[in-house]
Image (tube, rainbow, N blue to C red; front, top):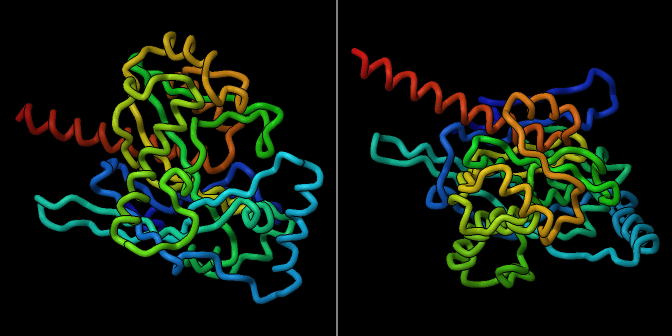
Length: 315
């Protein structure tokens, strides 16, 4: 497992305009983490800090009101806010590494008014420390899954032209872990039990998103393995990525996709090889390009481990 200082991956533009394809890997886990190795600390300590510029802060409600007038179906729901992480390497051969996600509470209204605002860069603080840099942004934690079929194809969706962000682009299935799924509407007492529920929601939510977006049954999916967090440079939007195996072949998945619950969010499903996927990344949002980078690091680590084993065995 690597942190952002030892594995900072960016693909950046030389101009002052932020490249929508560029990204940064905040956390990389080439050896994927199981649910028992990932926990959450849900606390108001990780909530957004209001910006001291009153005019800038007031722009949040102004932007939301403008958006709401133009789109009557706009809904302000709660989201988990990404506030950093704590990494414990375990130490010793019998101890597993452990990652604790620091999560606060935010909402879609604040996301629209900070991260998606035309003024989003003004909300940032000059700092190499990511949580400090983004302390005034909503930064809801999204999620995505690299789903591999039994015939070794990777599932990619093409976004509908009707969606708000990156219409027509290629993405992995995903969305957000949802506070309302576990009854969270505010910061509550019973901290330990709430943290356990939030930890489970991190993994339950990505299975839910995959089932809803590509139409496969949950029983066909492996337990998700956490592979890291990617952040799109444009709008500083973070997303947790997982690796999931599906015991169906790509042809079966393609048939099930036609009845997917959230199929309206995408127009087409592709089941592609890693080589084919590489050529599609030029039309992926930065955070999803980061997800593919995390997947490749996982594959490379597995191949290296396999090679070492075979070398040792041959001796």
